[in-house]
Length: 399
Image 1: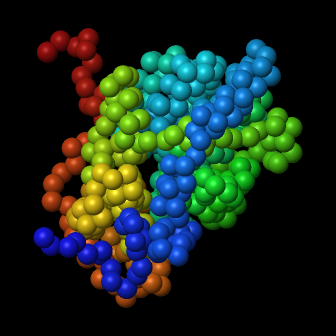
Image 2 (image 1 turned 180 degrees about the vertical axis):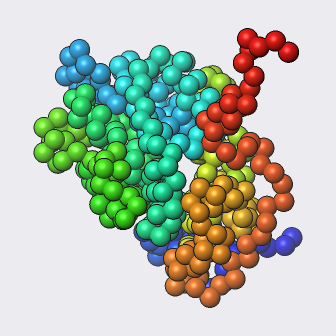
Image 3 (image 1 turned 120 degrees about the vertical axis):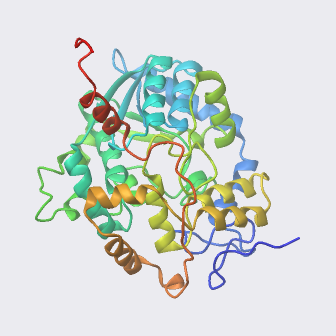
């Protein structure tokens, strides 16, 4: 049997899963296991019955003190986590939820369906904010230079809008899904280090504050949607956030099966990975994950394969085989990204070359063209809808 090697011989990989040392914030223990693998072992030994009791206390207190107001805010993308969270909060704990969505403007057709289906199934009141498309395109361009990926809008917009709604509606409790220990390895179940405050998501993914994004073409007025309320405003309402995954056992595969089979949540083809559930709401994850590969030497397939290896669904060799297949593909969405940002392909690669980590500076990244068209159209669903109806004849006209 052929042993599948990692992509790069010059860097260290976790001895248990497939994550490299170039992963942000990763630390290896004395056995060579990465932070996320360590967290997965902690997860097995947690008394989840006791953790759930803690969750129940938090939610019961929120209900007891909310009066006639909403009990909590549920940030919604329409993804499988959103669907599962909505089920848990409304059906299991009887919470009165305000759903809050920052529309990244890149919804796939499947993603838009999933969001609307969620609202319909669980009868959740909903507030959505949509930044104008011209601004989104400008920020997609600026994001590449600023943080080395295409998605500063998505990293920074949702938390800012959620905090704004919490302050505006005077709702203290914000409820997110999987634990930071689970999805990133940036925290630990045993000794939680990350403090939830107004800078939490800046540290997790945003990297740059809104005022660090300003330039001659992006003004302070443009970036108002990305300004988080002041510490004083947040403190006055008593805003705090929790991840359900710190209180109930989180299992992506089982949760996906549950919302798919019970509530008609839909998967779709996601570029650069073999799973169809993570980021199903967006048509652009392929570009985000490609930039991660270009600067760190791993992409979404590495994430998914590592999770499956930890969970015993794949061998480590099988994981590396999938990584070799998917992480190195050039996404179809890159064409759309270049179109909306005005970058040439050469400019894109030149910027990403400057972002490449020293440990893989001299490596051949072995990128290759994708060999098939994506199952779903790589264009925002709203754009597809507008084109369809703009070109449609008035139904009152006779043939």
